[in-house]
Length: 454
Image 1 (cartoon, rainbow, N blue to C red):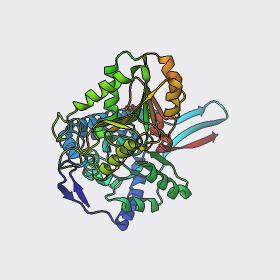
Image 2: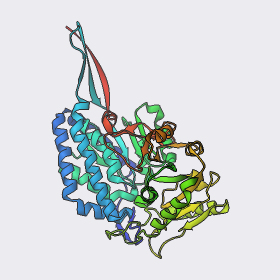
Image 3: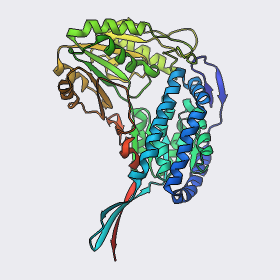
Image 4: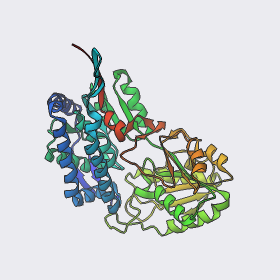
């Protein structure tokens, strides 16, 4: 398997893929090791994760550089991802003991009752390339703290980062057989689906997530899916600063080259502030620095996957054919690497793929609306349900819109953010289940009820 630098199109490294036989052996080793791991006191399991937390900071320069080289993320954003991952790990370190402790329901009656939380067993963590640290720690950290074994399959586009994660977990004291990395593409993922695992936790596309859910349904084990989105952002006419809202919306749309599950993918602007918003948005987008992702001044790096370039070009062409106007971008940037210009399309409507299908790139469609009612209708016109954002100085007015959103997350005067203390979940085609918060801690354990008499 070839690891290609998306900024230079040069070969970084070749790595052998795991065969189904190797994957089976890793599962068998993890299954044996998990029985010993769950017997390790919770405080010691958490201590291992505390050491992992420290190592991420100790080796952050090497980790950030590797991440940037293999996925194209601008280097400052790679550092940001590592910092964000450590904040989430800190939440798990501080809160896991509370939410995994046994709970006495009745202590005084003749029959005492309590709930104990036990690990699922050995779970698969099929992870994503766009935020390998962030989406990874959402799963494998609480899974390990909860006493599970983990078969961790990083995306083939973030394999080197996955190997760093494994190395640092081992240095932190996680037994090698308890955490096993699975190297490979789709065939490796398929091999995991054939194993008698106790849970499947996937981050990626709706198509793959649906396949995993269907293929594992007969096992009757937990399946958690963090899938894509077509997340809307609505700008009301009462905003106090058009410039600041335009800046926030632009960052939400193009951060990480637009390759975020919760990126702003479509914008609706009330007609009274539409022209001023478009002017500010395009002006700021024009000034974004495209270039070498290893330079700290770079804001837009290459896309991680070459095939995404043609996909984005097709979306833009479809929008133009249906009456859209490209105010900025729409083309490949440079002669080497998988670069695509920040792209702004106006005069959009919901007949366009740009406004209805996930883009996953630095492109955005902006549509004028006359009032809140029209904005709500358009925002809800999607099979996805990950996030929705509203910008307004009036909370009550914004809240009325947010309450109508069938999404796992809503934002008022912010967007494209995740908090460790809040559940991260999607609805409809955006996924099943939740990670993060106390719900994300308990996602990796199962309750056992005790009835005690005597």
